Image 1: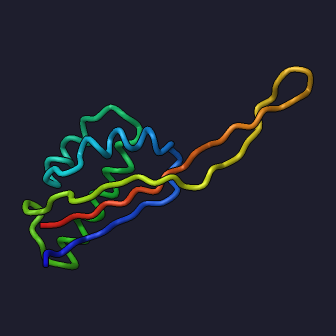
Image 2: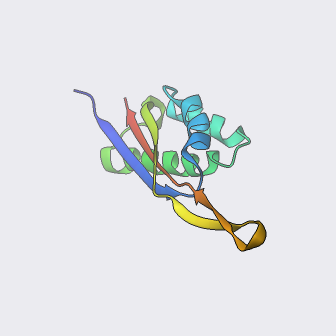
Length: 111
């Protein structure tokens, strides 16, 4: 049985659809390769994913004494979080609803 290191980041104020574009790009990669790829991706969603990946790698190094070179991203998935409901003014004094979506990111690293 191989060791799995998990990390989760909740309520990121970026829609899940936009987060999944970056998450699917690094799925299955070596952790160090994914880290360098995330540095050069020009998307706003790459920053929180990079922070979470750094955190999970640090947990693997400090808590489980694993080498960073041997870590692989086994799973990474983005779930939908709660929606912030707001209203946008329209004509004649009426409003229309808008939803500000949030995301939950989960990463599982393995050897």
